[in-house]
Image (cartoon, rainbow, N blue to C red):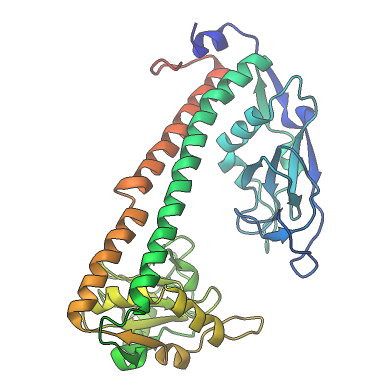
Length: 390
């Protein structure tokens, strides 16, 4: 008998999440008051906010982020943690309900959890909003079998992600090695970025948001080597044209963040259709130099320069003058091309969503989400029209 047949023949009881779980708020803790240790502090983001030397949750714990942009984000921890600006979802009776079953149920309802956000300024998600969610509870044995199937997918995604992280570290190592020129094999001439390229910045004004028009890109839209239009907003065609008189973005330009998270970089490879605000615009003479600078400006040496020269106030920024004075090890076009070829291959393997590990991770994640939805829907409704699941 396969899992679907077992589910079909078993009783399912519907309960409110608040009947089977307790929502326990975290404790306030700032990085300033923390004592550095090996305990992750879980707050309002997708990753630990910082580390601390003591925990307030041990064992396996479901956590929901309490506030901020990722309020409602669900995570599962198999180690001691400190829950801060978040709340844990604790199983009241572990003899009847499997915590991983509840975790997969919450992930299947992640969008609904996000939809419970309240607050005009900083959004919040509260346990009381989740307590009314209805969860189908089959017998514990069936819960465990469902968890076993779904955990195979999540474990595989975790393994692939770990492998990808290792490859990115390898890429960083070879990038730093190639761009350090320690062996003195090549003739290196140190120049400033301003000597090699036209360096300017985007508008400092705040154009009025529009319901349609052209995108305005800011520092938050430059991530992981590319542009994301998530949370970008439209401006009028008139404002777009006005900004472009000062800082028009072209193919093979580089965007370099100078406010907030300083040092994120993107290489523009497609015809741009946006304007920029508070972002440095670097205009190399050709694609080879663009790719060479793209890699160098992410190197450990470049990050040292950024750390030493960025402002130390509440609003972190790297002044345009400092960016223009960025020291660059300049080598011949032939050597640039060789370095770019090696590093581009590494970069492609690590980040191209169409090949290798990134593609495999994406496919396995979609596969997990597909079977999660199908299995949990089957538990709830007793219907499943797709192929056999063992």
